[in-house]
Length: 136
Length: 136
Length: 136
Length: 136
Image 1: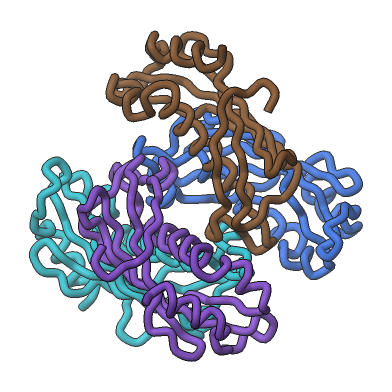
Image 2: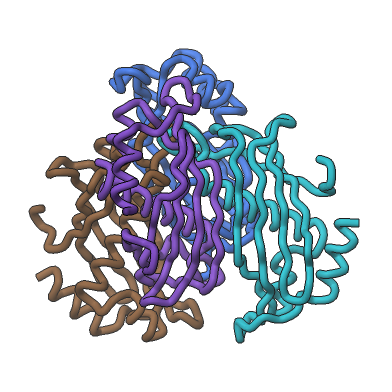
């Protein structure tokens, strides 16, 4: 996908469908998180290594636009990039496609906080560098 | 809440929390839906009565901004209003508060489709009227 | 319900349904937890008051038999009783009905552990007494 | 795992954890379903091919025993076998392990029904054969 260096795959679980016969729209929010976790594993030693530094990343916003329904057992590609990293704040942008067909797109906003005090704290330098390298 | 005529209550379930010790951000998306269902039950005979007319309401977008963490057993008030109803499209806006303190706010976008063909179809007149009356 | 002194109500959420058009079987496991939380709120000062004593209750087993499908917006009555409380172990038994018609029945097993060490610790005396009183 | 010919892998999602810092016990029920779907994909043309024959498989029971907590990002192996296939009924048995250490074990019961009438109907012969071959 133009503008994205990273993607991960999710397969729609039956439990993620609803009585409209499609993947429930809240399931996509979970998939974005699965994609962030995969992104961090690939580029920044994993989420656990961020936590190990006493830093938690909170989700402060989520936005999704649904273009087409997704169905049970669909294999979706979640294109993911980390953008706008400044101080204690950063965003991810996503495009979900199925065989090249856009299914949804979205973004999430995050803030890094000190795990103990829950106060905003700058994202660790190594994380900033890892993201810069991943998005280069 | 100023500008809202309707609210419903949700209590954070333990299953809705995550390992950060807070309500998972995807849980809020489900609560918005619970609030829409309650709104429709109050004002438009319930979602099942819309389906009974051969109409499905799809969710085409969701947007949430998280202000404060919610915790297990928190009692949240979900203020809900239906806006921008035009043809086959409408939106809901929400504010979630806990004892008057803003926890999150958001909106969802929807489209009414024919249940069989899945093609856009105008929201039923009685639904438009019910919403107009509810939001008067 | 014969043999039960306590019940709570859950309404099937749309997000809890699946593409078979019924409530997904994993949703019931969450409802049992909702019922336990309501039971504890009624009889033992709430789950948070147990945690406040440095005790966590782990779930060590779950068993469910599904008799009939449940559907979106169904109002289910979850009959709940706490049984077999001995030392650090206890069980709950449940019957879920809809307008008097059995939908499912089940049980869960639990162990109380010290919140810090995660080692088994006897259920607090006041909890044992509260349950005895509730089930008298 | 002794007695099992098939396994699939799940990685614990952050959304699947709870405020006890562990994977929520209801998440396991979803993983068993993920494993059944993978089993059917491997051995019987996938669940969709069963549905294509006008047959639905309902879940009539679930039983889980939790041995150890599972944590965010844990990679679990779900050993799965299909047993006791007779007429319209069959069961699955499961063992979940993490690096060879037992985390949970369980079983689910199922009934095949005609998708339209929802009445019990024998499992298709090709399904019975596929299972027999898989479990040989």
